[in-house]
Image (tube, rainbow, N blue to C red):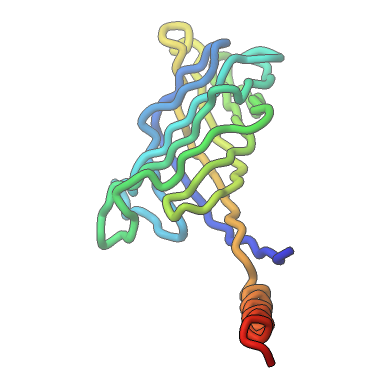
Length: 192
């Protein structure tokens, strides 16, 4: 069994809107402002982040609860600006796994609410690696506006991902083992 090391990177998204109903949450127009250590210059974006959940399974929209992950998604796309080093393709494609927590963080005034949406995401990076991702999205909802169109806005989203990669020492031991195995096979085939 090979030992594994975790590479940790961070995806930060801001802005955009979310549609919030008992049927689920769907984001639109959130800008990717940081990816893998690269930060977009002011008034620019490295790409987009979009996500969706399934229906509310417990609690309520205004007090907090849990959304289902069945049929959910989490997609990160790059814009492909060469000098920023972010390719023009889907950087991550996955879905929520397990319960998605919807938590009321604060209520300021009569109609201003701040929520966090958090959960675990699993999927593939553009490099072909499998990743397990915890994400936390901070969402502002003005209740009077929500009553009109069921929308809120994304203040900030933080998503850190771990990619399992073998440690260099483990790869060295594996290579040495293959050499020994090849030598043993050669001896058996050609005699001593």
